[in-house]
Length: 180
Length: 195
Ligand code: HEM
Image (cartoon, rainbow over all chains, first blue to last red; front, top):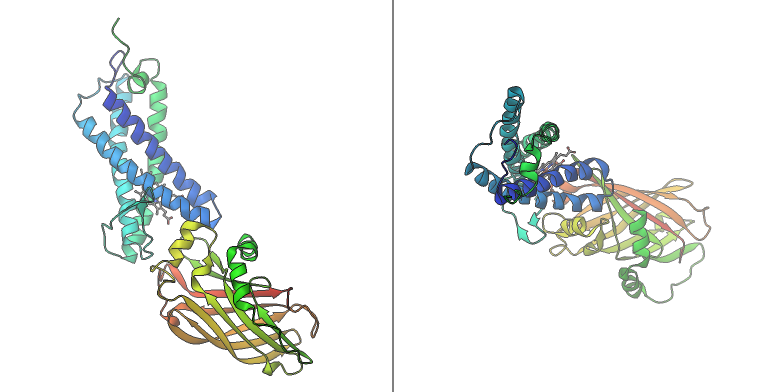
């Protein structure tokens, strides 16, 4: 969306909240899997990651619902950057939808049967039967798609920062100015 | 592990076990060491490998046992230990409760574990092979521990480290396989107080 126009409140909140949950899930995944060696803390962070991921999935569904009901953003310039941003957005929606789904499918198929409780309370049902090969495949897919999301997010954020001056960044970040 | 051991020495389980172990004065025999095994002088730990997760370590915080070491006739020595399965501690509330749950050790169904030695054989000046029956998860199977004596022979306090391994499947404890390895290693380290 170009200078002047601003997204509605639902559009901005669904963007900011789903973005925060996705970033937290992504950064948390790297921390729990690569940086933490204490097994108790690591196990606990896995549980937090699963809750964050499911919260992200709910917010993403909200975001997609809101996004489908709004007019397409007016193109940014130059044209190649507009094509790139359209492609980036499509890819982002695909990734943020299927990553939490693969995560949920993976823990469902896992032979470990570690119970998942959202916020430590609500039990998360399994969406697949226990299967070792399925679990291993989904585990790979989940992690690789996660890294792909990281790369696409770098593009997304770079694009947003490159379009601060023309008002694109503010259009999603801030409430519309009251009419003068 | 060290932190867990520290906890084992200080936690509420300690007092409980001391009470259970308070079996009165031990009969003194020359050349024979009779002692009680408690969390005050012993640490019982395990390690188990897995795929996609670093080695899992844990300790048991509540147990009592008796030890008789006949220095002149090692074969006449014996040891027995009773362990409360629910006292398992893996260094974190959420991982420990998973290990206790019916998905893993199922401590509600199988609350007790025990080991009774059946034979002791000297393998060197500082080591013995200790074989006994381990009851756990509703099954009983022989296990052999390699016991390395760290203190000077015949001298007190006695200090030793016993290591052994079990195949979980032999006990029907196959949870998490094959992601979690079939082999679990057990380490029992004793030193100091009362030994
Ligand atoms: C937007 C949502 C999510 C993102 C961005 C995300 C991202 C990631 C990434 C990048 C990894 C791999 C970390 C690494 O290789 O260092 C990972 C691992 C994991 N994720 Fe997610 N995830 C999300 C949602 C979920 C959900 C909903 C669940 C389950 C309910 C889940 C369960 C897991 C588990 C169990 C692992 C560890 C896999 C292992 O190595 O054993 N994730 N996640």
